[in-house]
Length: 127
Image (cartoon, rainbow, N blue to C red; front, side, top):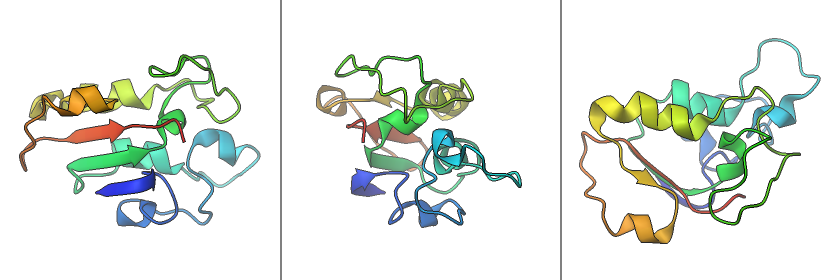
């Protein structure tokens, strides 16, 4: 899956997630929502066995609200995760069994060798 928008956006999320609201990309957007709804970024990490490669934006929905962005050093706290889960770290930890390369910027893409057995995520932009 390759997109010019966030990988959790309303156009790409239906490939792997279920959400009654296309703006529920991260848990910060579910504040006050009841009923056990799960944000799209969390579904991507924990409930997504089919998509092996994903490139796009939306890094901010995967990071905690206290984490600085690894590329620009800013803290987008208002959109960041409030559940204190760093979904990028969790993704790579869960993907260790299939040796997922860490791709967070343009430079790290040059060293990858994508195969159908590997899970890879590239989050090139905070939004």
